[in-house]
Length: 425
Image 1: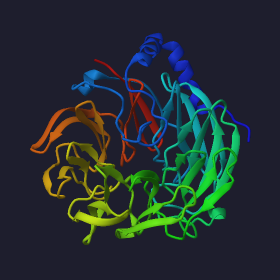
Image 2: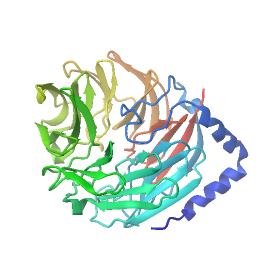
Image 3: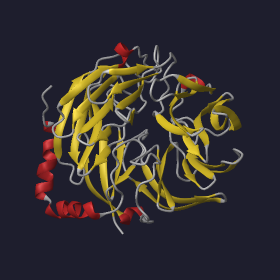
Image 4: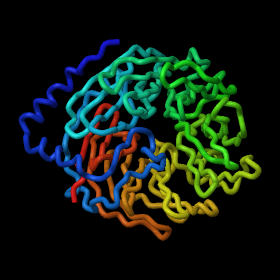
């Protein structure tokens, strides 16, 4: 399918041309720390950007460089995916009526590079029909997975289509709030959680051809990940009914851990902590919450569970033996909390930084983005939390998209809007 430059993005080029000071500020940003961020949870899969420090005064330390506000067009077209950055290219997904869109911008200036769209019809979905899964950049190609189930591989040079598949024709079944699981690239295969007849499928990354299909199970919303268990690398898929370990070469089930939650809302990425696996979901009616899963002879067993604390859709920040995260449903006014990873005990709860929201570790501190667009820098430990500063980074809400820290900048998204801030001293 031919690509085009989004006409609504062209005024941004004019803006930069008329503001040489802003352009010069952007040019200097390329030397800043932070590294690339080409996929969900970053290049190392640990959700930790490559920087040693972060300005404590956010209003003085973050300077707005550019913004766009045309990523979603039409009714019920909201999209929630994070941007991905490799070099000076940023890729972010959006929605235009019944089409998925992939937008490539210059990561430093916001100038348009290319824009691709393709038909992706489907039923109405609460909170918008735009993509939730984060783009995955692999060298000269980018993989995307839309809410309606379209999996696409596109050229990073110009957005040209390389291949495209549909979850439905792979036996997939759309969850209540649309396909949301970010795919995983493992060796030569793209692993996609589609649910239904096949919990997951492996696609050849170059052709899109099916390599293997797994067993039947309903899909969850969490990203596909890997873990080394019993000395063997395994795929980990957080489905609607619980956690599954799969053999990477065949998709066969290795183990299963039941974790029922309200509406199958398993949204956060399973995280390995010292050979154990931390899982989190919204708590409701004694279901969900947080749990630590240990492995004996390669099989999962509950180590501890806490059904009163539950990060609904934000991956916890792990520092030492403690987890820090916003807790409870993504639409309810909850705050930030600390949980002891040795026994699941909640150490404290703090509503100062709003919530719910998302958080990412920056240096020795944590950057929190609350549901109404306020960005705060805090220093948490097991005794409590110190808040250094906060400011309104983006207007609107609910702000469900995690802030991305890359190449000396912070990228903040709310549905249609994407704003870039340069990190200063």
